[in-house]
Image 1 (cartoon, rainbow, N blue to C red):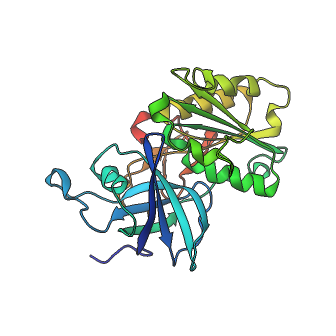
Image 2 (cartoon, rainbow, N blue to C red):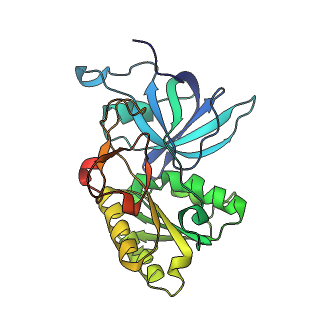
Length: 283
């Protein structure tokens, strides 16, 4: 079997802690710069499949940030949570370790006016490790002068990974970011949808587009609330993927009225009205 098209060996530049998760930075000398919402298939060059006596497939990981790399190429930052043998191995990668990279794959978030002709601004809603693609989206909106607000939700202090991606150069959280935590250690005690609902109920809610990524239950709540208030929404969904190219149909999700979409090629970003609910089975 030959390597997937576009697969290339890259070097890890850094691996740092981020609120209980890891941010692994990879230098990609050959690939193009990704757009917010796109993902990569990652696999460690060594020790991959060595745990639990079984082989496993590359992991689909959204890119959280990208910057020009010294010497050429781009630096790709990935927010990782060690939830299984694959992500555990990726979290263990050290500086100068090699990692197989395929991507960028999938589509990206659209601009507010591309989603809704009357939209002028954006509300970014993220939860848990799903805040990753919203960090890059927020920076792109800021660079283009798109008015935006960011709402982030976390379970507790031990699961606030990626929050530093929304801080300025001084390390202080950007003023457009609001927090909700279920244990109440920061921001409003509750869920991120508690921050979203008052915005959707406002008179000018339809002048903006909601962009969201997070756990399935959170995404379904965001999708439902936006539908009830007539506000356009784009969701970045997750699903187990074997290839990333649409060949295996392992990431197929149902469409309203029948049929399926493959998240790796038709998504991972989909409008709220393009999916028949957000199932826990997607994650």
